[in-house]
Length: 243
Picture 1 (tube, rainbow, N blue to C red):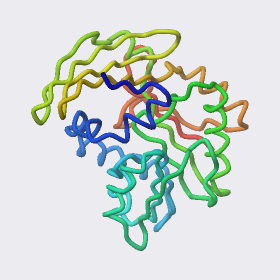
Picture 2 (picture 1 turned 30 degrees about the vertical axis):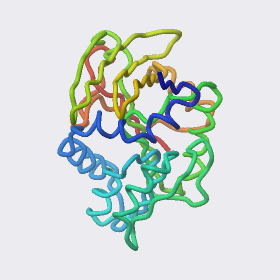
Picture 3 (picture 1 turned 180 degrees about the vertical axis):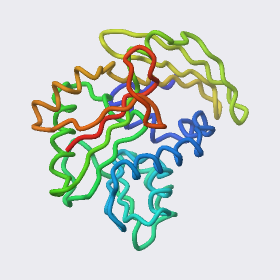
Picture 4 (picture 1 turned 45 degrees about the vertical axis):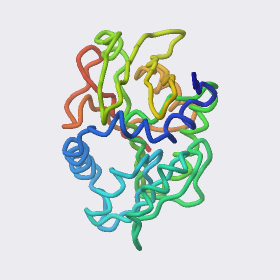
């Protein structure tokens, strides 16, 4: 049995199986969200954007196609290697730890698709927000697109089986010690695998505390990718705009 638990996001995200399991994530929804977001932010033409924890670069590539100068960073070397095939003069990808400030400032820093709250140490959440603040120029906006923990916990599906590309993934979800867990078991390449995703069940109130500590001003809150009003019980997302 192969199990990866120490810094699970550094190991699981770097496997080909992660991308197989989530291959059907909606590009149309992601692109619609990006259009809504940049319209709300009213970014200048050819604005510079940092896509923080960019994965394989789907948001970065689309933002670049809209005319923006985009830098995508991620902790996963495999994801960055994949995304780099799309690089051009105004689109670049680098391996980078989002807890540390990137050595440049941007018109917008976006942390999308629940790419926050993975850390073992509470202090790393604050360090990441302090890094985002340092990465914003004088007129820049920060964006965090996080899950709505209250909604997710209330609607948690404990067990699920998904077959993708001939691999049967058995998923087990639960809440423990303030984290939302997803255990992923499957057999592939002659081995049994177990990976455990975990994300801290951060609420709006938790983020507000972080923002206060980091000296960040929360400007707007939305509850879905259409930028609808946030409702703690019914919204699927917690999308925060700040500076």
